[in-house]
Image 1 (cartoon, rainbow, N blue to C red):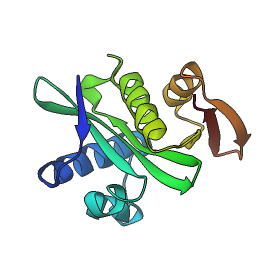
Image 2: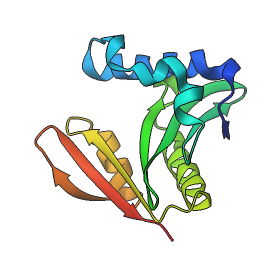
Image 3: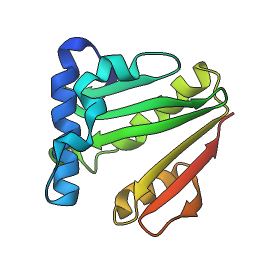
Length: 147
């Protein structure tokens, strides 16, 4: 898989992949709840943030982003893998790529949250070294110290 920083020409396709994944997970989707995806470039390619895409054989298969929490902490967001590409290790590769970008940006810590019903995501993050520091009943909140 080839991971790169998103370009304006790929933004609509990435938005579609993320929204499709959310719709599959929740069974329905209110696109107004995801306004950041209407301007991926403007929201994620600035000040310690990045939006990455993963392509396999030229096809977009996954996404992942980091946004800036503060000087030392980044937040993983918009992790999504297309349905037909799941179970092939692409999410793990994307997490690793995001961690590398975070280190390059000077972050010493990454945080993220995921829905408690998404066991595959929870297992991915736990097996990637993330520790749950809070479970609010709906979401599990994870953190990882970077080297």
